[in-house]
Length: 48
Image (cartoon, rainbow, N blue to C red; front, side, top):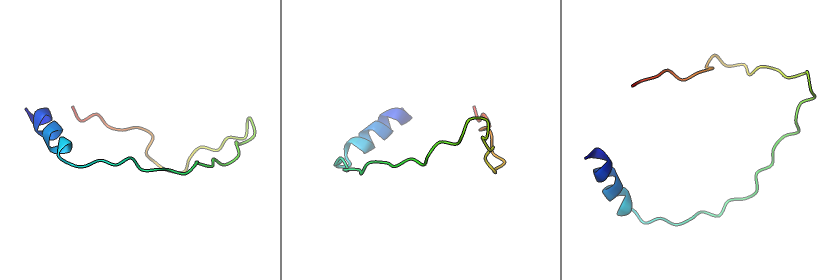
């Protein structure tokens, strides 16, 4: 039932596709010199 309500509500919102620019990625790190990210979140806990 919840998915039906969400689908109905989303169908009532007008949608226009947004033009997006090209994404520029930074250069890759040299092999063997990878640094681990400096944040404590390495996984997402399971809620269900």
